[in-house]
Length: 145
Length: 451
Ligand SMILES: [Zn+2]
Image (cartoon, rainbow over all chains, first blue to last red; front, side):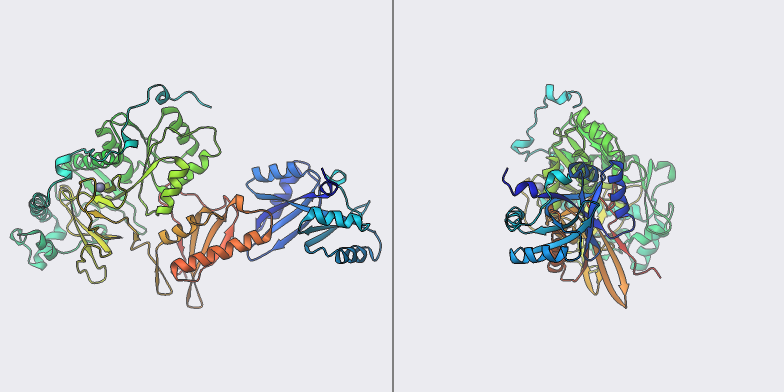
């Protein structure tokens, strides 16, 4: 395993139609398996969307949601730790900009321990390596999942 | 895995894979030379007109058209006869079209109408025998043999598909499993446990069967031949069914008013359907003018059954769109009709353009990014027809990105536009979320009439 790879975090991406109860159905399935949702976001298009979730047990979540009939895929994302104070996001964003990393989408979560920016980038392994080299803090797979 | 199939121990010798051209149920009648066929047709047409004269509807119609027993001197004279429409049969409910006394009617079937009373169809003992014989011809033609295990997965009630195939298959000596519809897992289990090698069902149910089979442990590798009918289906659908079920698929055409299934059937050439000319006098007409069209011209199929006793029909307007094929078939049988491209009552007119659901199916099945199920909704918005097509995303084509979905949606819309010459709205839905049909698929919901 190369240094970059352990920083690739498995995000669960679920195809979901825009109709009442779909999000609740996803949440219920995860709850039944006692899977903790660390962060999530929804990307919408015309009539449907993709629910993206960072969970503590991604393989279990994938299996459960698939069994429920959901169309699920894994997506590699990177979790960049931010300083939990004003300017934290600015620092990270500046770093990513300087490194020339193009972000497809991003969302954040905040816990007792840290503020984290989840980013989906092109060539995630290379990006993780660059961020590390420039002094950025990445959460590893082990800490989260 | 279940128990070992009996067929594994004693495989039935069959010549199917080597080609079966030359196999007939009734070789003489199936390959009658044109002049002998025409002589037989003329005799039977005269008999049919004679029988029809016992029916009130025809008595009146013939009188108005000046038709007597002597009016039919050649086959061309059939054009002097009036048409019979589905509505005429409905108006005759229940027994208005019977030409024999009720005690001679051995069985009754009905076909469901969308509104009001169904259409009643009656059969004498001879009719049932003629019908079973036609089914036996079709099944023999495609390579089914005495001793084959045949599972009949269609409705056994008033629908003619169940009992029609059942008695034909029994007549030719198959081991018949009257499984009817429903409980798909059990159907798959029986196919496996009984070593079924021939199935009959609607193409949509065959697709459903293959989908369910993928989730079970039972293999269906005993299957060889699939007989699919009761709804129009495309060549793409054929390839898909053959791949998924590992069968050779044959198109079956029939209409309850003309006995039921078995009127026309594909032979191993699978390039058009042999309609049985000794039993059905066939014309193709322009549905608007009623004028007869020549070979190769597409129009409405009009049939005068030549052997029906209980319920003779004259120039029955089937509403099915096809054409007569000019080329002689390598199998030695008579003139074929093209596969039905749609029924005139299924045809949708969207902003003045004719659309058959089979065209939509053809597009959907040709796109690997989406599944095989679809639904069509038609609405009128601000005096304009709007067609919405819902189609399922293919599980494997979703890699987690929103663009996987938007790109697929755009591709389906573009392909439909190219094929139909019509702008449609495509709604991409989750895999498995659209309705599955066990009988005739009802994929079109036309909401324009609803106020
Ligand atoms: Zn042929």
